[in-house]
Length: 381
Length: 198
Image (cartoon, rainbow over all chains, first blue to last red; front, side):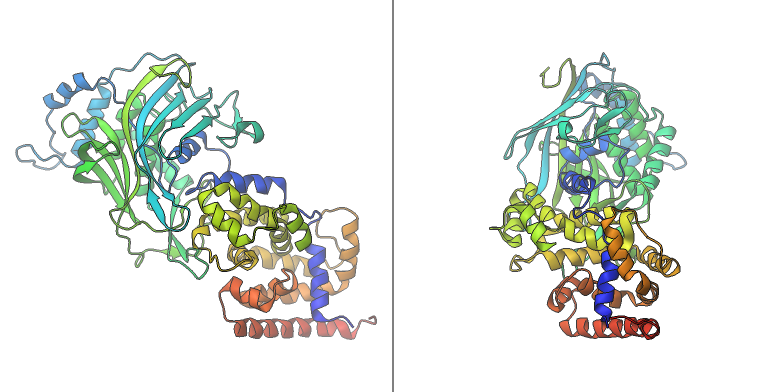
């Protein structure tokens, strides 16, 4: 008579896959995911900008954030001429110090007053920035990189192949596959060996699917927040894996999505709408004397949740956008709804794994130095 | 299975721990861990939750392992228990789907449950008659008991490896396994009495 275990093994054999290997598609997904260290996509579909941001803003970070910087000189005057308007419905004595919403309003005014650069669809937006990232140091724990000069070329209409060149400790050259005829390589760094997937072009300097009015853009980022929630891991089990996950609020997710938009599309109308929309997100705060990755000190509008503080930094005089920081913050999961697995949502799940940053530790910084329009990827203005 | 995956890796000289350590500085090295264990984990996931979910679960397992590799205990040369532990956690999300799968087997004892080449049919037929009551018993097991039973029977893990994978004492592995087997045997009991073979 057969033992229970041998019958069980027979049942197991009958349930086993026909092939000895895991499907090639799974390997592709894993290796692809390994190149997007701190975040992962669950579904193909929404895309290049997000993956681009991942690739560039490597660590548990969100995206690089950058903004329209040119023509700062003339805009200094504009900002100076328009003192912070009082908050609606509140009596605001005198003028100073502006609150977070006023800073964003001034930043929106600055962006709105920025003349659009002339750009043909086949040209490239050149972005010069300084980035700081957290990386694993090869043994354990993490280290913060020195500031790395980063030059990025993004297709004006989103259909051409872009490029990222990063200098510093580990120089990197990253090809960005454009969305050509509605198709692009699924991974950004090895386009020739990865399958093509459907895509929608994400223009870097033309109107795209991102609305150019504040209300529309606000609705857009909250739609993204619903469709692609972000999760933060908590605790650490015996295997070193998180013991649970907390879902980041829609407000926080919307705020971080705006940071991504500021990176992905530099059209002044988009930037203006993005700042104005950020001012309507509950929970934004003002923080003074915040240094960007290039060492410039500005005033920041921040939103803090689940262990990280996201900072949009502005010039304290002109309210020109200087850059984006992500800094570790206190996080007490008590009181938060902790679930064992972040599954259940659709679209993209985003997870932070690995060492939890301590309060005040740099997670990510990106300082915008300049943007310009050039004709070829790799060409300096 | 083990022979196949070890051969596929082509870097037998390196222990899993050595590869994981190297992957801290050079993340691409982690692909070796995938190549060593993907087939094994995929087979196990496929058995428990079927082909559609197995893809997801295995991919998520390796990505979670990759991201958690900094805290891998480099004193453990063999990463298999660690990976099965992560896989078990990923599978837990699909508990209802897994139970539904076993219940479906209960209802369709003699039917094939998957598409596959002809050589799979043999295995199917052998297990076919006992499948109904066995699958019903599996569906009813407590999740922790089922994990232990199937890690041993299908995952081919030793008691110690199961203990390491699940982060529980070896004694608990033994007691869970005994309880699970008792229930399985009871479910098979009625069936065995009417069966005249072996």
